[in-house]
Image (tube, rainbow, N blue to C red; front, side):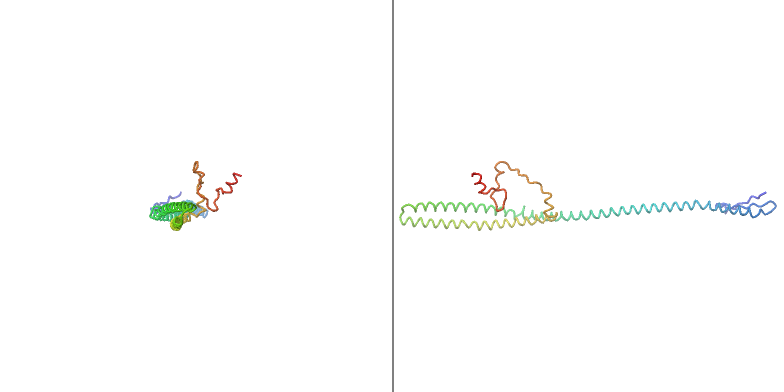
Length: 258
């Protein structure tokens, strides 16, 4: 009859189960076979206790490896997004710089040309050119008319004294014509001032076009030119310059009547 082995408190607290070797009745030895069986049972129990811990460790390692891989993938995504943001920032900085430079050029034009004393001076110079030209033209026409009248009077039978007075009058009219022709010098000086202002404006406009890529880049945004003039205004193109196209020459006009 086997004897039930008593379990101590330490064994109960540790949760260990120790396979007790039953004792044979009367203290007889159960034999080596029994001891081997009990040893194998204890080994199996130890392996069964260690297997869940091993499986848990393997599962934790797999989860950690998967999370590390996902973290690396997320970091690569963030890194690519940061690079794109940096490129975008560079482009935005370039646009901001171009806008700032354009604003400075516009401010210079606005202050010194379009809305300043310079533009008022240009208007005054052009007005003076028109007024001076009209005055000189009127003076020349009056002198020529007086010369024509004096020449007609000389053709008649006049006294020597009248001839002398008519000759002096003609000379005075000729001098008056020479004086009136001085308007050309004044007109040239005034127009030169206007041209300097126009060159100043052109320089800053070219600078603004260079800021945005040059003339070739601006041409792609130029709208088509549409002539909205009607009637006679559509036919008036002003005097022709050398090399201008679209104007009829005198030979072309003569050929229409031949």
